[in-house]
Image (cartoon, rainbow, N blue to C red; front, side):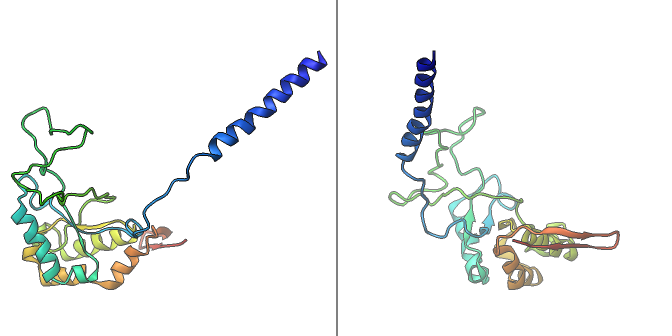
Length: 205
């Protein structure tokens, strides 16, 4: 019996060593060292303004306005075609390729060689409705508050407005480098004081 127990114990002791050997031989996970994703994305999304009928010309106009307005110079650089860029022939939903990926509608977005220009972008909070003044349906204080809350949450600053028709006052809000710095520190602020009269939030590491 003692010999049997010693044999079992020796066998059990070998199991963790075998598991360790198998896992230690696996290659380590790695990511590209290109800086993407280290800070919240900043840019524009088609959903709120264009939505159902995006065309190459419309998207290029928004991208050009992002640059000419000075938004690109303070960090807004992504253009997100949110939906309706795919082939969708009927009620069954989008066409998919052999890998299950949605197929780009080449009539709306013709490819240029091997480049299709459509890349996935993650989002946290929804798009920011700041840029077109009161036409956004928000008061100035509400627009200022939305941008501030998004920055405090270190959320992507993805604009949902018409960049070809920017309101000068809203443009100043969007280019406020102090607010952008709060967003780009990537620290989600926490409430440190909550009274009936005020709330104080602070980003802490």
